[in-house]
Amino acid sequence: MNNWSYFQIKMRYNKDVKEDGFERKDMQLDKILLGMEKSMISKLYNYLLQYELAEEVIKGPMLAWNKNFGYNIELDDWEEIWQRNLTLTKSVSYKENLYKMIYRWHLAPTRLAKINPTANPSCWK
Image 1 (tube, rainbow, N blue to C red):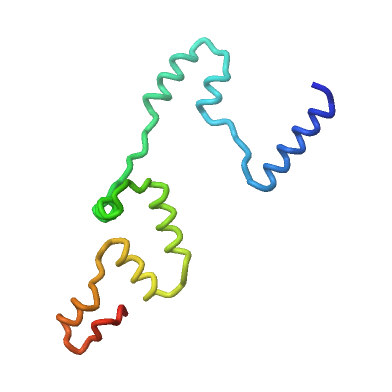
Image 2: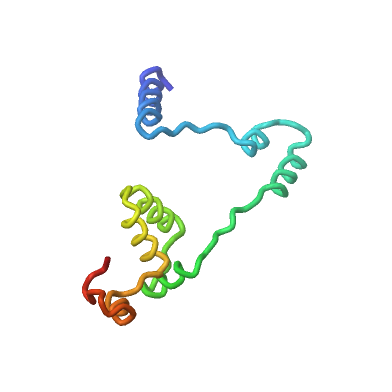
């Protein structure tokens, strides 16, 4: 590799680090695999035994929305929806409506009008 290619790659890497903010640090598994020790297999085996897999928690509302849409919504998409709702507004009443919609805990205005006759059947507030 000549110097020009090296500088091109280095500049591209620095630009990516600055723009995207990624810079990879060696993890424990990397250190084990890159090491040239005699006990590498036993260290790898112990690491894999201690490694805990993250459990995916699927709640009832997620299943209900999946059933309505007709396809599965990935857990990452649920996380994005939840984070967007948290940062969308500072209004407590608006956040309450968002939570009720996600958890399917809302009552339609017509149903509220049956419960409380003075309520407007077309008002969602």
